[in-house]
Amino acid sequence: MKSGIQFFAENPAPTVISEIPYSNYKVAVYLTGFDGNNASYITDGASTYYWDPKAFSKDLTLTTQATYETGTTASKANIAVFGSDEAPLTSSSITFNFGLAPGASGGGGIGGFQIIEVPTSDEPLELTLVRNGDNYDLSWNSKTGMVYDLLSSAELSNLPTTSWNLHLDPLTVYRGIPASDTGTNALTNIPSDGPRRFFVVRESEAPQPLPLEDFDGMPPSLPAGWTVRDSGNGTAWQVGTPTGDNSPPTAASGQNSAGTNITGNYLDGTDAALTSPEILIPPGRDALLAFRQFIDTDLALTNPDLGFVRILDAENDTPIAGLEISSIEGSAAGWSDQSFLLPAEDVVGKTIKVEFRFLSNDDGSVWGGFYIDDVSVTLP
Image (tube, rainbow, N blue to C red):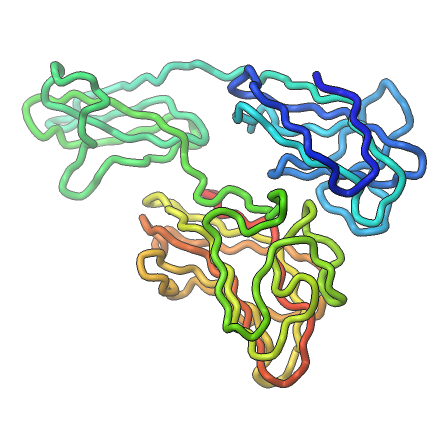
């Protein structure tokens, strides 16, 4: 338990909790504040919560408020929880940034941090094998969030089993098999490739293609692997707190977002792109691109200023046909949630990138531009 922190600014020094003794855990943060403070925030870089200090009480009120509009009063709360029983934290250290929410005054405080172990199931992986003519039927217990490889060998003396090769037949390589929703995976009519065959199932964590990126690294900077390019006209994708007259009043979450000229309007003749790191999509899986966007453009009837989202083949940076969100325009209506399915048949086994691109004409009508936040690619 670490306790007793007071703050009176938007970005005081962060708190780092290290040498956490648990492999799976959650953190309860006890929230306080002073009279006159109507909103404070705390973030671990993945989740951000806001609160208005609750009067002293033995009863705990959990904050789930993840967004905040400058100048408003946050929901009253006295506890925030990072991690959960279903999705525990796993790092050996955690960094918390906290402070007053934009436009808030007074002072806030942290009463304490409590690290809570999340027990995990140690149920062993059990493989069942049954002869099916000259072939085999196999089944095993599986866990959500895991993937499985089928390995095989003609000789049991060939140890350890981790050195065995992936089992394959003329049509299938048994690799990266996702866990079944039923908790039991099954394969039928697996060719034996000889008079006898020994099998092993290898379990590993399913990779999340692109974990949530909220651009809230400290200090604000382009996240690792992300790149930008532009036409050199003075408009570029930047990461930070938006402050332009036509920019969003705040980031969609936390303190920072990515946007075109975050301190002002875009300029004429813009061609600026922000591109994600390479993202590997496992074979046979759909993927879901999700992000939050703010758009403020000229809404011209001909040749308007527009945003685009394209999915690129990372091998040659060419757009994948049919996977584009085009003609994004608007009039500063606030942040909106966007999601886009990437079907398996279009991205099967590919390494991709996500490109956010903004183009403007030369008519002299310039506005806030294109902003994004909370970008992720997941396996639904």
